[in-house]
Length: 133
Image (cartoon, rainbow, N blue to C red; front, top):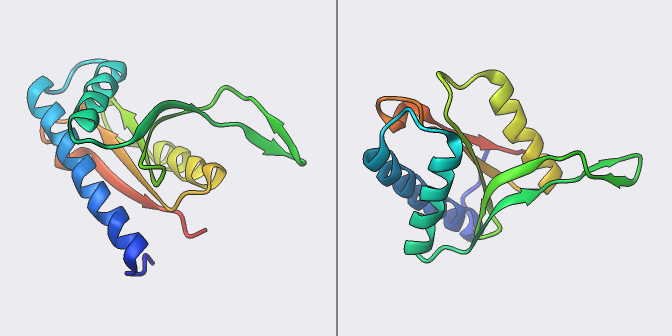
């Protein structure tokens, strides 16, 4: 459950705007390109919309109290609140959802967006994942 409070309202507003940016990218490019192209274009849209964000954020794994660099990278973190994981695959699989949930837990964030650009209509490629901390 995602309670309504000022922080969560802000997160909801941010996720709506991120989705709007992603729709703009999808309308401009359509399906069929590599994930990296969509990421660059989404970052351009986020910049145009004056969002603070980081892309390709290193994500270490903490194992037995030791921080290990296992090569994981978060595609985009917006306003230090929302993790955005991008895909360009035929369909979103449970493993993609599990990946984003793991990123949310490791990065200690509540909300993530899984966006698959390899669909005719972007709405069918969107999934919002909540980490119930």
